Image 1: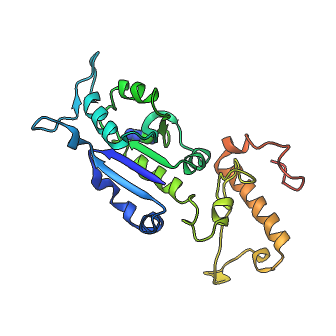
Image 2: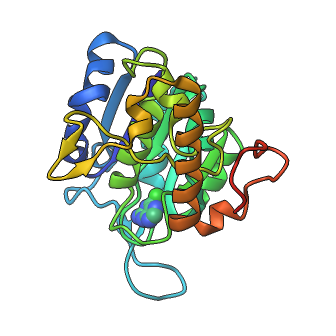
Image 3: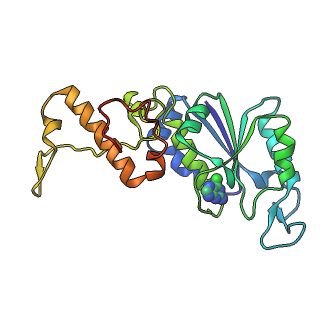
Length: 244
Ligand code: 6GU
């Protein structure tokens, strides 16, 4: 998968050299290219923003510089374009799965009050464009949101996780984990500071372990994510799932 990221802060993306994503880049599974937006300015101050029409606080990113940057980065190609913004559609595990199936993604990181909307209109008629939010809070810019999305998408690419089953068991994973969070996990020793590992996990009884894990996932979803629990479809809950 090819990933292009356009930003005025390329330094934010240093962590993409590390860990799973770093390894995927070394292997060539991921081709990440980070671009400095200011390279497409023409004035001595390398200006990327201006005051908003209609007044109001803050600054808006200028369309011309974004247009030149995006045109150069995409050439004749047509990546799927992701615009990080708190006004966007929610980034979910389902969207991460969908994006993991794309050959090429372009992330355009806005700062200040955002990018002039005509940029989204212009590329919306040439590319598939999604404005995406990672949650209901406001960050200073799209960079951290893009790091989040790249990690969530990157770990779903074939061969990036050591064990492909990990992604199947994930909280929110499509399939049996839809609308469920994962339950608690344990490793050795069997007793730590008087706290015991639940005996069923030491029983070697795979059926009972699967049943217990599912009950724990349901419990934790009800406790921590009642709004998700309300979306659980009674039809798809198996007959042993505890009544919520
Ligand atoms: Cl994608 N960008 C910014 N600036 N803030 C956010 C966000 C994105 N998602 C949640 N808050």
